[in-house]
Image (cartoon, rainbow, N blue to C red; front, side):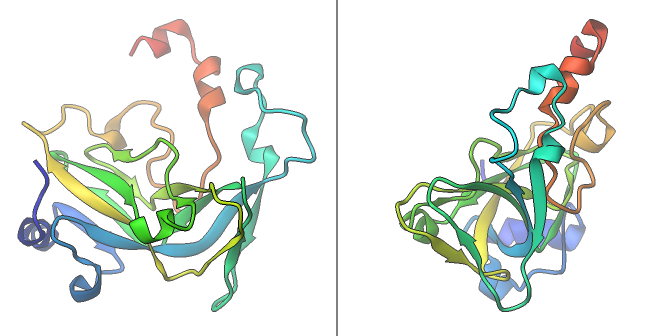
Length: 198
């Protein structure tokens, strides 16, 4: 069951959902979602430097990417077929009994822009700046401006608080992130079989 606008507001007031900077509820709160805005930091693939990505071979995916910071008032141009990592302006914290889902915006989807390839679920106890996997599925470049509404979050209560919330999970990959982090999939292949069983 999704939290309604009134329940999202209650959860914000109680600190069960924490958003920094504090959202403008008139502009950002929907009937059952909260809009987040595009930040200024992006990670782009340097596709001409390597022929392919193989996370199983210990390849440092971070080295395949470069950071871009968009100056105020200037757009980031999403090229057709491009995938970039970007962050929201907002920091998000979830209580141990709440999960969240990142949703794309229909208005951007109609231009060919998706904001998450697969990673839409944010576990209970998430703390950090959400990273988006933004892709341009269309045939034309699209200008994205920092500060524009880029995605929305819905919130779902759990049947009980999580025994091990995300920030306490051993080996969590992205807790506390403040910038778009490259994939750490390769870390899974470096763990021992006993670690993978956890």
